[in-house]
Length: 393
Length: 65
View 1: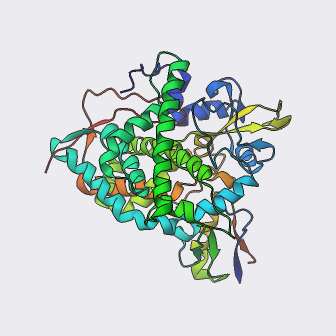
View 2: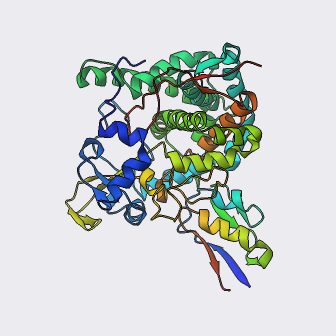
View 3: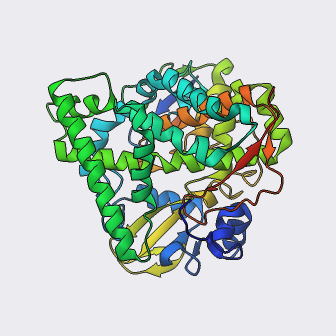
């Protein structure tokens, strides 16, 4: 619990999370961009035609977005434009390519089952707190060759960075800054150890990988570790929350997957599109320009709403409906253009593994009767507490 | 004969083509798609179209008739 009250269910932020398809359909009927309701005053870009153009024109629509919160480290390569960006991706893409990530499958499967083992016999769990949150962090520790018994400490650190507690922004920034330094010290120690004594883990590959004699400096490796932590953990957690909530509340879809858990890859792909847990990505205009027929000055912050593009029948006819087991629809849940999510293949592995293993072991389940489900009201849409119940067999 | 092509300038490694049509595409070490079979006959046409339609970047191209 973060101790903060949940968002008002009548608020725009809440409805955008709880009913994204209805919310974006209403806005799209008014025009391709919305200037009234955006997160922190950002312009909401709602259609593929405009969104696709913005994701691909990185000179006009930069990812070097001002307004990163104080105390948060710089995000490489997420907030870096080409050509600098291209160098980082050349060094990083092989580490996160499907063939590299596939080597982790046995670890992901066993960590998933270890977590399910902890609560299975209770016949209930808070899916958010007991599986969706610890799993990506446990895998993260494994990736970095760090001991799994440090999981609770690591989760606390991560939480202090992502949702720092405090009465005001100054206090929160102090907590965040302290936690960020602790994480940096932790990674710094590991990088030094791996430099002396290479292991078969991600951090060793990060610091040793070379392209044409070029390799990452320690500072760059540290920045990248910070990005992996900031961008790679909560995104998987909220995606799992969106997916399990959908399946818990749609019996026919749940039964389809439970009858054949091998369908998980297709189901994940379609639910990534349908739920689009990372609802949008931010760009800033580098000069005066028009979007959706409206003029905007240089320095305008835009949110490209992937969630709108992915469910717009104007993107592809039929996109306003769900086809659970097709998994072949063009979607932008991982963004598009050069900033396509670096960790997308690892995320897919985690999501597919959880859906497969969960439904193999717990084919029938429901939201706990009487439980109040509250969406978090954030651009990364999720449910902080998702109590599920099942019959222990 | 229909030719299958990937526009390397557009591919950013979503990885959909080689997952959905593994006989026609492979992955390189960066996770980008590579065409395995350039000349497509009728039997492969539906798999090829699947890859074309699912690519978020529209980097997979079918040319000729």
